[in-house]
Length: 134
Image (cartoon, rainbow, N blue to C red):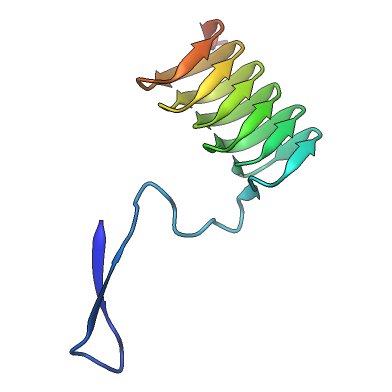
């Protein structure tokens, strides 16, 4: 997607820049981000959304959406509402809403979720169970 902008002081000059709509331009303040240079060995709990681009080992509990970025490498049991996997995950997953295993995503372990989306090219090695309604 491309946009054209005009400088405030020069109305005749236009500047064009590209914007990738798949990547949010800013990380909302309530989100947590683990960068690709980080290596964390601990349990993680968050009431908001979490994006992981680094390496994480431990248990992860997220009330909102957990996104494992392309550089993300996670070895953990995960519990979240929505889980999006672009990178690598080893461990069992419980999602109260949905799991999305995107085309570059790799997951080894069991998944329990109401919904599961697996894009072409993704690798899933484990069992899948639909969440039981009570």
